[in-house]
Amino acid sequence: MVSITADILISGGLLVSGTSITKMDVVVTGEKITDLLPHPSNIDAKRIIDAKGLYVLPGLIDAHNHPINLDKMDSFTLSAAFGGITTVIPFMQNMRSRGIDGTTSETIDRFIEESNEISYLDFGVHAILFGDDDVEIEVPKLIENGIISFKMYMTYPRRGMMMPDDRMLKAMSLASEAGGIAMVHAENGYCIDFLTDNFIDEGLTSREYYAKSQPRILEVEAANRAATYASVTDCPLYVVHLSAREVLDVLRGYREEGNYVFTETCPQYLDLTNETLMEHGALAKIGPPLRERADNAAMWEGLQNNIIDTIASDFCGFSKAHKYAGG
Ligand SMILES: [Zn+2]
Image 1 (tube, rainbow, N blue to C red):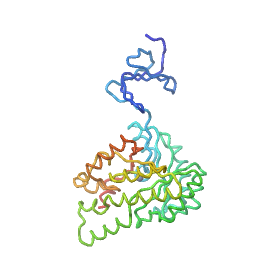
Image 2: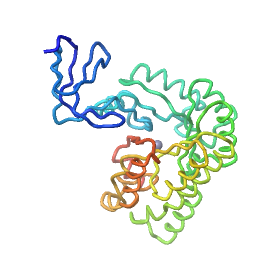
Image 3: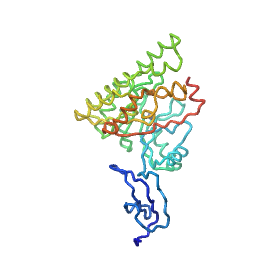
């Protein structure tokens, strides 16, 4: 018996590090991991957690989520903690469409104040800038306040969410100057509305037309356009929730030219296909839409080849009634 007495010994689990998965014992003293030892370590501890048959991971960061509908930071972070998440980075935006006054930076100030009271986990914040945000005021102000990342939508023009291209360029150039990073939801919103209108006019409104109204080419085009703008403005870019396999090669090209382009996908794009939507209808409607098995495979390959940097949940809690109301 080794003579160290630790507070906690996590014993016999499969320890997932950045480079390997090995059977190790984790020794915790106070609030710190003080040793990683081959199992069995025979360390004496006040509390021993038998992790045999389990994975032991460092605290996970969920870098993309929206606790603004049914959830606030209390219920959201509690459920995230049960999934092994220790830090979350929600997106916050101006709430004018919900009748709440204030700019995006003011909304974020309120969000931080409230979350400091109710969050169970550590958190950061990303901003979202909508078409009605004044980017020339908001971008420098957000970055000065420590909110260095902000997302812009290239779709949803009719919901007032889309950032026009000229404003996006301006926002990127301001971010570039101030040390920020732009994020985009890459889909061509005008084309989606055009195709959707056509299907509606023809009476083609059943679930099989959802994915057809937002085909993969619209994600490829928008990602390419955003990366072009980021390159022109010399702004780092993070493209959220990639779903279409062709996008990976497009963004890899920009990286190879020396641009700072970061990429994200989500569990739903790694595991689900349009078949799920055909089965469950409105409950499986997400944007970008669920695609094909070959896209799932490409996302896994992208992770293996380091073309994809992040897996994030894009959690956005709605009730069934909300989802069905969307049709
Ligand atoms: Zn999102």
